[in-house]
Each structure stands twice: as C-alpha cells, then as structure tokens.
Length: 206
Image (cartoon, rainbow, N blue to C red; front, side, top):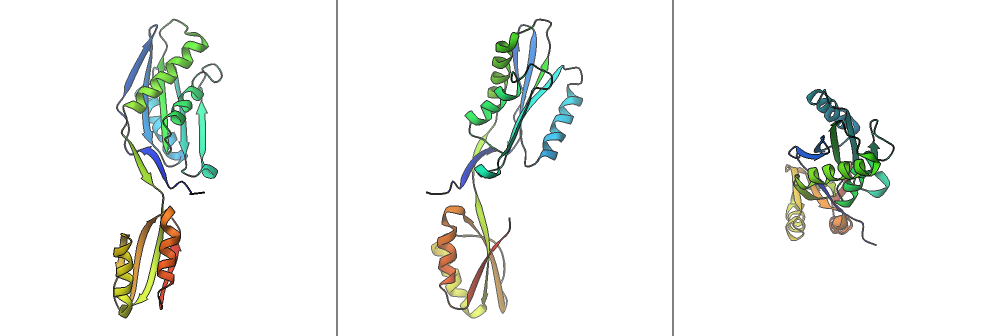
C-alpha cells in the first residue's frame, strides 16, 4: 500500500465571513496552525477583537499522518456538540489539516435550538473554508549525501535524473548536499545513492 505523501491545508488566514440567523451573528475564521500555542494565540486575539461576543467556538486539526493527528472541538458554553463538532465536521469534509476554525457568536436575543445552532456553526465554518485558499502540500524526507569531490559527477547525475530538490550544498574536497524528496520516492532515491561507490546518504530529522 502506498503511503499518503500529500495533504491539504491553508497557508494564510481566511477573510472574515458572517452568517446571520434570527438576529444572532456568527463570524467565521480559518487559520493555518502548526501547534496548540498558535491555536491559543489566535483565540486570544479574537476574544480581544470580539470582546462583547457571547461564544468563541472552535475546532482544529494538526498533523499529516493518521497516527499523529491531534484534533479538538470546543463548544465554549453552547449545548454539547452543537458548535465544536459541526465545525470539526467541516474540517473533515474539506479534508484539510494544520488548521483552526473559530466561529464567534453574538447572541441576538432569540434562541435557535440545538438544530439551529448546529446549522449555524456548520455554515459559518463552511463559509470560512470557502473563503480560504486550500493548497496541497507534499510530505518530504530530507537526506544528506556525503562524497569526495572526485565523485561529484556521479552524484549530480542522479540528482538531475531524478529531478531532486537541493536544499543546500557544500562543495569542497569533502562535499555535502542536502536534498528534499517526496515520501513515496524516498526509498528509490536512497537506493540510487547507496549503489554509488564512496558515496554515503543519511536521512535527516525533520
């Protein structure tokens, strides 16, 4: 089975969107995030920006491999599962990760009921995602290749043939080149360099 080596995410925050229902206002936002600290920062900023709002409900997902994915859905005082999970459902529906969606609610004096809330939070989250530019990114491995200068042509030939991305290089008597390789091609590339006499390749931690 092929490992999945790409994922969808956003690279910059969405524009603010607004959904209204029975005088309640729901402002939706999407942010790219890499960790929980960034999540907290965005929520704190929105609480300052919307200090008179009633609820700041959100959901996020971080991670690119199934076994590493972290997610959280927060109802922030709304009835159980009426806000955070509908927002998270949209993250799943759009198949995006490394993302935070916050929906800020101003109560308009008329109760919407649980089904009304679910619809409102889902719609505001969907609108925020539709207002975002979703991109596909590849999951890459980094390798460092070590070799003597005399083997330069052999190494460069493989780099050219396999269209490899060079991150940085030190080309002296003792040469080092760092390359970035898509996950699905990593083993093949590693084997190519290991088959060259007097050339070593090692994987670098991300």
